[in-house]
Image: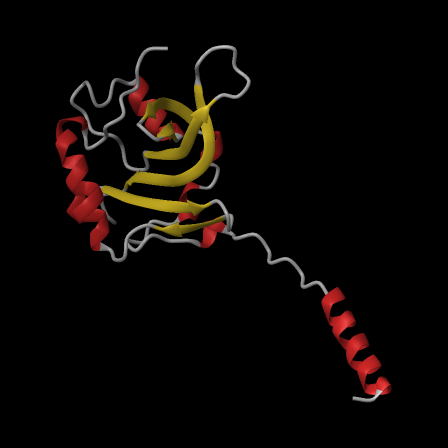
Length: 181
């Protein structure tokens, strides 16, 4: 190869390696929908909802938050008073992997990596086959910084989520209690 061709190829290769592709825009999670139609967008602002409770599992910690309709119902005594949650009541469960706090002087586990965000909403017209409740879970990929719906088809709502929640039918299908503060 002559020196002129070699120089030209070197310049082209060097120039190409200096080109940086623009970063992909962050995912707009509010465009996502679960297979049963429950959309992430229906829960816009969930990050500011009031806490109902927290839960702790072997590998994760969860914050359970309620929208204003859910919180009003809880404060009115629902479901302990035998009444059902109203249409429009919604709850979100934010789940993180947990770790031992590296700064606390005593043992305490704290959230580490986001794992999933799960939604439950009361809409009897949309979800008559599941006693009026629609369920959705969105798994979070921390490396990619993206969410994806969990479940492959609309039957997931009934066969997985609802079938588990039937254990608390007498509490209008909601596991989480609102305890005194």
